[in-house]
Length: 348
Picture (tube, rainbow, N blue to C red):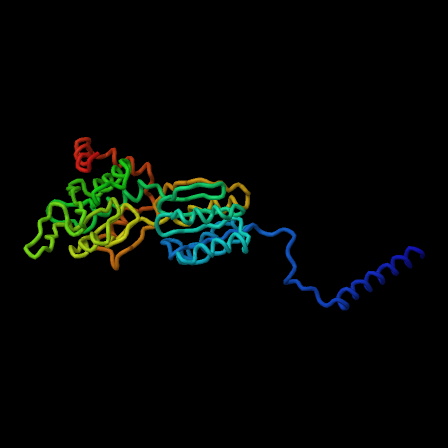
């Protein structure tokens, strides 16, 4: 009997206290409550609509990888001018664990400097080539340079093949931006697509930027445009030189991040390249440094329309199958005498 009375009284006291808590202080504000264990967070900033990084592509990455279910991910499209304020906000206000910034071209050193100011946040930059500088809170993800070089060579030797010898110009601006292995990859692509192709590696511009070496001028001073119908850009060219190419209606594929009348050039690695890094935020194993992705990057359509045969050439090549091993094998398949001849033509 004593136990029953005590237990009954205890329930009345508890009910009274609960009633006082709810009715006396108002309903609890669930919106202001925070979970005791919050998800780690990542933010992806896509600069200037970088190729391959659409919202649908990123949504698919999350939907098809259950490992990301325990990570809060937000995506923002930003312009170059907005980037610093967005990076500041990600670190100071949003308290994200990892901020991934995707560039359509080369990773700028200015971004690295901004990241160095926010050491409490890890930053990962994705682009076509890395910037100088490093820090314990900075990672950079770039494509293997051999792969876009091979693809540029393949496409140049695949589109609009003329009835006569397939002449392919190499736009160098008087210097090479590509390393010897990259030049070999470019040649491997050309030879794989068309073993009969003929190179015109002396397609260089004069310092004035108004004429092409080896092309005489008319009496009016206008250059005779002896530019091959298809060329590969192996170093960035000036705006003046781009005008010359446009006037010649030249089709230019680029093996470097470029401007001008380039119809196709390499972009950043695809979103799947950062899947492991997003997962590492959850496992707290994210690492800084420069990482190279051994698969085809996004391909940037820089012209209004692809020349005839480009889409068919891409389908035949299937860029997703191109790896550094694939490229190296293609170079070794070129007969030694042609290897030697082509390298000599570009001063290697």
